[in-house]
Image (cartoon, rainbow, N blue to C red; front, side, top):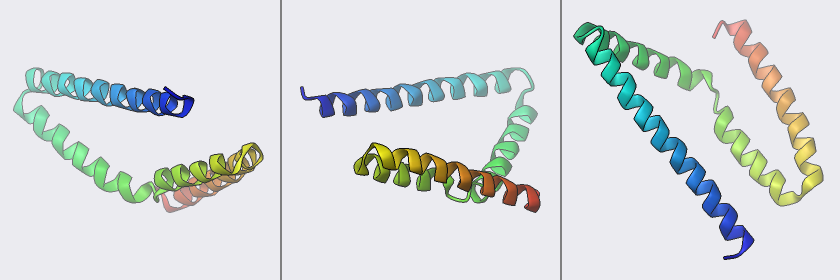
Amino acid sequence: MSNSYRRIFKSTALIGATQVINILLGIVRTKVLAVLPGLSGMGIAGMYQSATGQIGTPAGCGIGSAWVRQIAEAVGMGEGSLSRLAAAMSGILASVIWTKAEMGI
């Protein structure tokens, strides 16, 4: 197996393993909420998750997908562009954080 296929396999395995862990933790969290506080706890948790999802999606400003695209482009261009990208992205992150702080998000 070539080096690129090995890297792809490792990355896929890592992402898959983290998804399995997230699913298991979600099951445990739901079970604890169902047993300890009961139905009212499940309802409150559902409302909380809905509210955080509705607030978090617009507040994210698409940063995650933009970073993935920019990092992939920089890796394709070479090592020097990756360090320039890191400096640019840290500046963008700082400006987004300040903008969100000003807006109260």
